[in-house]
Amino acid sequence: MTVFTGVTALTATLATPVGSTTTQPWRPVIMAALGDSISAGFNACGWYVPCPSRSWSTGDHSFVQSHYLKLRSLDQIISGHNLNFAVPGATSADLAGQVAKAVARGADYVTILIGAQDACVSEERLMTPVNVYERRMYEALSLFRTGRPGGKVFVASIPDVKRLWRVGKNDVIARGFWAVGHICPTMLAKPASTSAADRARRDRVRGRIAAYNAALARVCAAYGPACRSDGNAVFNQSFTLGHLSKWDYFHPNEAGQKLIAQRTFEATRGWITQDDRQPLLVP
Figure 1 (cartoon, rainbow, N blue to C red):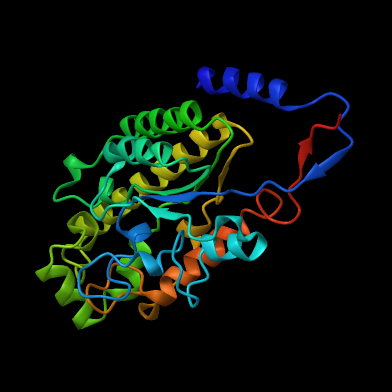
Figure 2: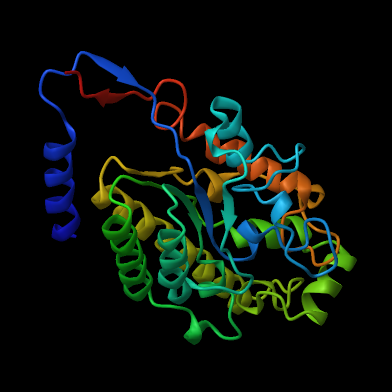
């Protein structure tokens, strides 16, 4: 992580003008959602299709009150500049490619939520190792810093899929969708089982996701002040079946997307909201 530390120090030195006497709020002109099916709004308004209008990040549907809509309410300069490069099924291996697209389009604010599919695989042994996940995140954020040195990054924690199992395990319809769709089998296979082996499996998968989130926080901290994490807000958030799509009982519906938007945007207070002030060079 020493590369981030050095670049952050240099950036801070170059960006702080001598003799500044006034400030202005930082506002992004172009933003982009990066990640997997959650940020793509998958199953939030249609049958097994992405629904970017309901994305917690860049959605423009008024009910969700996404980051984009909240930023637009602060400054119309971002209006119409809400790009969504999130792809259903994406893993950490795909993030660098998404970052490249965001850089090419000039995004100066990106949100990242990715990692559930690194754990939701057919067998535990196929889960992405934590060190590999962390390296991929580091490399992706390094690409963004190089391409958009004045930009900002928000990283949302991966949801707790064991909490998902807990809220749906007693619902016969949810269990049916999980089984037929082979949804996140590492966690959701045999959802009614109380065997020691299945309890231990669920705990291990949850532990892997918690480790991914810890890696996210480390990478973001190393990036410096231009990166903000949600402090595990999404991972710790309670939710009910009412926040899940009735087409798979896995992805967030409109209400679930709204909840993610609310909890994550709270973490930006003092960073990209009214309280955030950046130095202005004064002649």
